[in-house]
Image 1 (tube, rainbow, N blue to C red):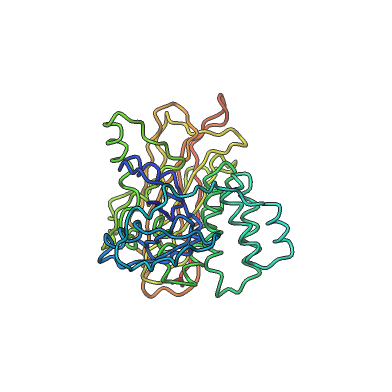
Image 2: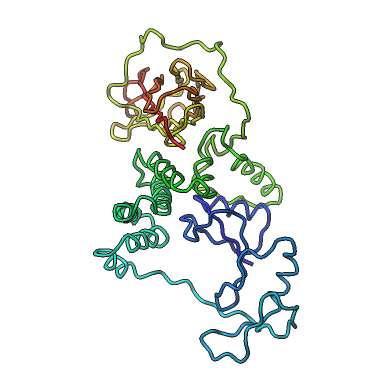
Length: 406
């Protein structure tokens, strides 16, 4: 038995397998090259790699599996000794099975040949190159993969661009999670996943990818709330849990919510008169991501704000002063789950970790289509260099929320 998952971060599947002590291999199809629109699906594939049944009736799946594994299928490359039996014929004898299925080692595609084919080729050639670069090119090829997918998008009709948009989103998010990341990569991923879903609202995988990072009102279930439980139980068995390259964020751990919890008025704005000096030097670099990329009036969005100390001036957090705060002032008529956010300081006197804040907004039902800028500001203590001056600074943040999506 072999499993296939549609997962942006395959190391999380590896941790899940360790937790549940799964002994069969799991294959990764992060790009959804199978173009699976619903899950789960079952395929019966013989030892020659031929699909003999797709989505067999689940009502009698045990009998169907037994009939399949008890078959012997002739090698299509060799003259047939007898006709292959139909998959729904009575259970045969296990003695007809070969002693072991043939092995076929994985072989990397010829990237030079794919580049040559794409140079003057159609959109499908560029898409094939992009897929090969993501799967086989390593982290150093991710920029080229993004270019290949973007070129494919420019050559294909918009009505058929869903798969390419989705794969381009996967590539952007993969670069965001790497050392080659660019500040806009996460939002670019969300934008392309949203465009893919707009082209086919019935695509389950594409919708789930957006919901993974989106608001709680749209979540079908918590995506990765099992991670900490898995680690505890794995350690209790005397094992070391597999490490994750990217820890799940708050949106990925959040539970679904049926009714929006609007913020109370108890929180006080920390700097209403703008007395704190602005961070004009750019000690802290802020990134804004809105999920989904566009929203219908009356619906919710989740905002991700990511703060990183500026490497160019050797900036770091000063953890010996008051903790970082952020205030969000929503437009009139909008709802917000929280106005004031506080991030506790790290245990050390100084640190350079990435800090993230997430919150949710509900757009009024009568809101007009267009882009509304939501205002916010962050207050933090920062220092430049090891012996540099430490300052308390304010940074204004403008969050674009696009109204009019599906």
